[in-house]
Image 1 (cartoon, helix red, strand yellow):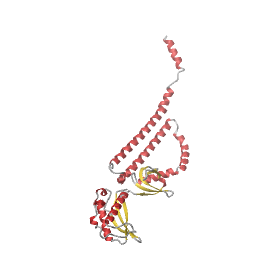
Image 2 (tube, helix red, strand yellow; image 1 turned 120 degrees about the vertical axis):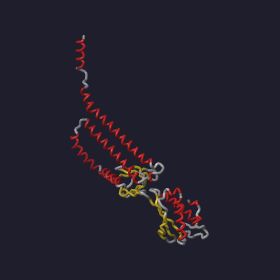
Image 3 (cartoon, helix red, strand yellow; image 1 turned 90 degrees about the vertical axis):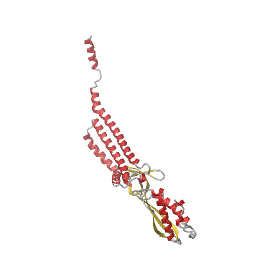
Image 4 (cartoon, one colour; image 1 turned 45 degrees about the horizontal axis):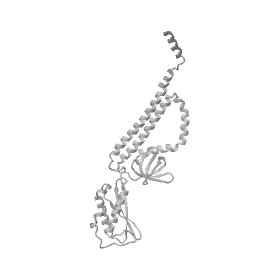
Length: 313
């Protein structure tokens, strides 16, 4: 009976498939492909997690303010982190692709000649991409602008783009304008970048007054406006120093333009300018001085500048 059973097993084994070949395929080809694919995905997730963690740590220092008043170092670090994470992910997938091709059993040396031809073709067709990458590299290393900066870009063709920087990579810069629209500009097409929020900004206010006005009284009034603005608790957080009256900027037929300037936090020049204009209009109206060039009078009975009401704040 035992002899018959052994003969049956031997006869059946002749027709059963052999798993030796499948084990070799599994160990030498399929398993490395699966491992490298999982490793690339996990490494990608880790880079994104680490980038988000470092970025959130930078943002936590400015939790109670907006991105415009960040230090230049923080803005640059934010941009560098985005670029480094992008480059790291690209390297991870290149290494994974190399090892997956090797696991398939394809000799890498056999791909050198086709890769050279393909690289030359891509090089001619992707000159714009290479130009964008090089421009982005110098843009970031030179710290021209960073995350949160308000910038104006002059683009190839004469068009312009203005907004707040939301993302900077080696290839593109993304801006969000005042209407909430996101503008994506390839770095290689940027001809000129004007940073409106680097280190500090300046609010410039021009005040038209009639030519017959008492300049001494107007100068005293505007100096007091600047002092009150700098002493205001809210404005003092935006101003770096007291607003300064520069004097007469221009003279027209029926009026003169006086200019007041103020150094502000980055990107806050627009808000400070609006606030100063409101204060100046109220102060001039209280003193009986019209900013309308067609109305050239000053009420001699108007209260002096020392009696300016607190409402001008």
